[in-house]
Length: 262
Image 1: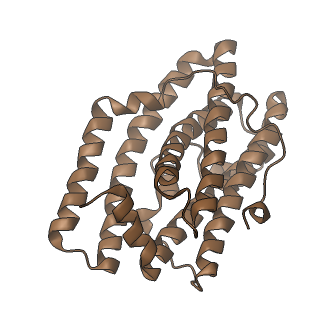
Image 2 (image 1 turned 120 degrees about the vertical axis):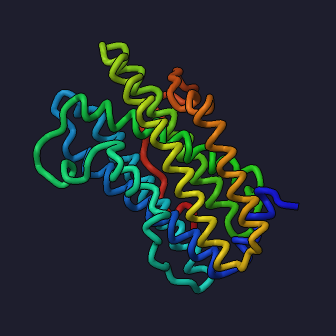
């Protein structure tokens, strides 16, 4: 029977599919780490209090990248080149979601509007990350090889999502509410489309590695399209709501390290 657990277990059990999965994940996390470091360096003077939290966010993303590399190394595997059609982070950037990399590579300080855009983009993508890690935690929290990594990354993603909620609400209270809602909606509708395309691409590559029959590939593709149809109709709304989180100041303390995972 096809299920999330059986599907991921199949990917986990095969060295080549596991290496591809970890390579894709590590690349995305490392890219997120770079983006957050650059944003922290360019924060406008009026928002300098945010810089340590943005830096912490980037440090967590870098740590996650190192964890995925460590999981490969533990099995004697080397990373593989990430297929462009599976590069979620870069595809978001190319579609104008978040802050352009050309801007982040420069030296000009960001504006408050840029920071609002960054936080809105992060609120949407961290919702996706938190949900994905919660799904893995539900099925693999006690797995002897990946369980500890799943629990640590899931905890971090929950912190990131809480931080985005809290900071966006702070900006909303100071007059940025309409801009936040407009940006959240634009980001959410673009993200669900890109997530669908990346999911289809990942499943195509995994199917080639694992030799899936056409019937299984078709069933998975149908499932991905069904999720997109739901998200396009109503599911995207969960990505744009804001509420004060139970975890206040979630990124206010020191970050854990990849050594804590090991």
